[in-house]
Image (tube, rainbow, N blue to C red; front, side):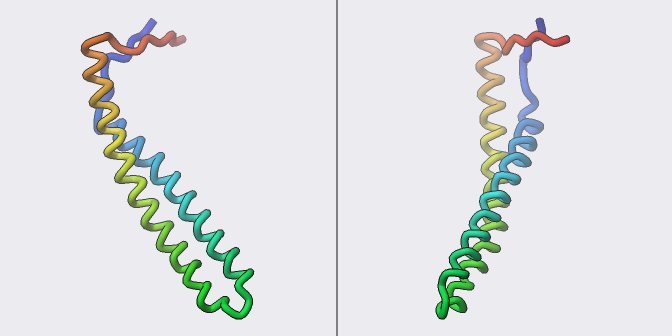
Length: 97
């Protein structure tokens, strides 16, 4: 039986930032695709609807950056709180082979 007594706050924050960056990229790509799909159905208004595609590209960038920053902060706070709780109550027990 092994016990996780503490997590490295910075290492957890970096992992959460990377995971959240990927999720932000996926969300941005979905927004880009939906903007392109809407453009197909706009008919004569397609030039104005092309703004939706442009906003989708911006969404990819913004969501990726915001996701990474938010994930980093969340990971750091979660690891810090875990370390406090593990100090008071003991760590998480794991069976390893």
